[in-house]
Amino acid sequence: MDISWDLILMAATMALNVFILPTLLSARSYVPRTTSGPFAMAIAVIALALLQLGNPLGAAANAAGAVLWGVVFALRGDRDHALHS
Image 1 (cartoon, one colour):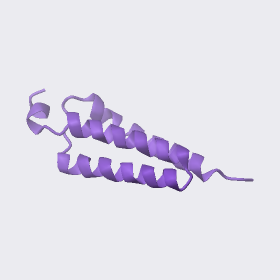
Image 2 (cartoon, rainbow, N blue to C red; image 1 turned 120 degrees about the vertical axis):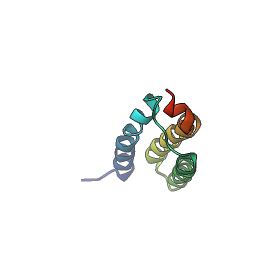
Image 3 (tube, one colour; image 1 turned 180 degrees about the vertical axis):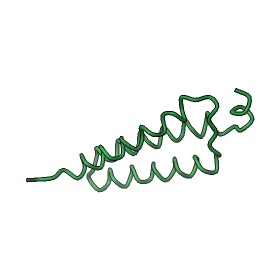
Image 4 (cartoon, rainbow, N blue to C red; image 1 turned 135 degrees about the horizontal axis):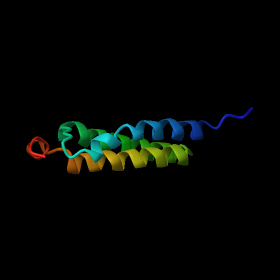
């Protein structure tokens, strides 16, 4: 049986991406930008590395994660907004 590690990597990454959705959907959520910014950049680098290694599905899932964390950076990094929502 031939295992597609790229498919497994994509499925696992997408499963992880699901867990950031409650943070994105709640206006009261707060994640410090010093956490979300580096995390988004690191995931983007992982996506680029996976693409170069010939794993396009894993790369796409990680790119989606990088976008999600970028949105967290943009929308959920303001503590004052989270406290007054």
